[in-house]
Amino acid sequence: MNTWRPAGRATDNKPWRLVGQAAAALAGGMGLGRFAYTPILPLMHAQAGLGPRLGATLATANYAGYLAGAVAAIVAPRLIHSRWTLRVSLLILCATLAAMPLSRSGFLWLSLRLIAGIASALVFVIAVSAVLPRLHSHHVGWTFGGIGAGIALSGAVLAGGNWRTAWWLIALLTVACTIPAWNLTATPVQRSARHGTGSRHFNALLASYTLEGVGYIIAGTFLVAAINETASGAVGNGAWIVVGLAALPSTALWASLSRSWSRSTLLPAALVLQAIGVALPAVIHGVAAALVSAALFGATFLGVANLAIALGAELQVPHAIAILTTGYSLGQIIGPLAVGPLLHHGYHQALLVSAGVVALAATAATLVRHQPKELT
Image (tube, rainbow, N blue to C red):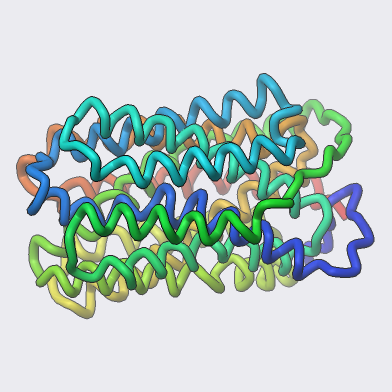
């Protein structure tokens, strides 16, 4: 049984208030600010003249910004302990979302998605750093569920409609999420560095999480478009809502499972399930396969993030959250670029590549399971 608890936990008598603040930040910064691009992408293809290559490049620009934000959190760790960093990041994110419909300039879109990526990364690192040292694992799980709530909300409000209206709706919803997150602050936690075995296991974890960044983001960007190739647009949008609804309780479920099984056992299992889910729409067409795929993807991608980051904290490597986020974001840059040449054949080959890379991530994750002991 895994009984690890984060060091330096505060005796917070109102944990759910902190969960709500951090979940709101993640819903706005990630579920809406980052992932709303997935259901908007087909609208921009149909209405704004956005081609597949530029669509992939916009995704890459956002992930490059995410990488820059994660690196900034490592280079200047004081950023993530500043309340104003979170506030400014959320406000900048809202502004970039609202500005997307103001032009059809590819350069403007690239610039806005790049800046949005930087803001999203800072929001993510701050929100996770605020809860991980202070709350029990099931509270942390529900915090990550904020991303799923944002994804489900984006899918629900963007059913059909106009691409410009879609961006403005997402900007408005992100403003709504900013309000409850306004006073969230990450608390500095001193951790001792580990060497030898712990560092080697962290390297394996970093490799796995980086590969997950490559594999998951291909599906996270193109899943709706891929489903729309063989089904109506309503199915693709409905599948995205399913992704969000499955993601909402998923991290709490994986956190609950970690009470009986070690995270180093659960991580490869979650990755295998994700690989199966991503491959499904590419090999089996139809509504049922699309919905099962969406459910498996939603139920695992946040769980993987939660498990990996908690494992990094267990290994007590300094700046583990920011380092893992950096590897993840580097993988996200590589993913869309790697499948770009395949997109003129449609999106299904890209999903198969995605599933293969996630399977490699699962293989790398098995190297973490033989760490000398689980921390208690």
